[in-house]
Length: 218
Image (cartoon, rainbow, N blue to C red; front, side, top):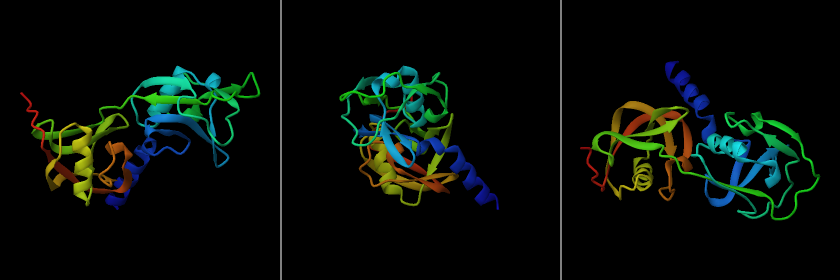
């Protein structure tokens, strides 16, 4: 049916929201931490010497984060597992880190303290539209090059996270029934940003949120 087809379209287009091949661990959130790559169903840290700014740009983009802000060996500690045995040679435009070319590492070992840590900037990827203020309106999230409606049937927790991320204070009201339909976001209410909520691969009525902030659009 049309509904099933639309749901599948959303699922395909949001692949980068929950990547399976790379992650940042032991940082403050999804956009900072030690770089780890999935290899043979286990995670491997990456040596600083095998990873540069262009590689970092690909990782930040794959995770749905902003541009790289800091890149340093040992920044987020050492991994307990194996170390990735290739040098990445990204051009910076690839969609996925594992799409990048690689070459054999010049040295066979990665010295302690050299597991690369990466901090990506936080993108301005959530907005409220049509409410006369940046702190009121229908919830939209920027994903895969376009703004998409966010909907859910557990409205309160999503609204709390959106108001917090936008710096708009607390939630005043949530009005379900926006005529647009969008992907669901399942939040606990404690997340610092919407991207850290679980993606629900099903279409829901959009949400209209009013936060306590009153930054008027002039």
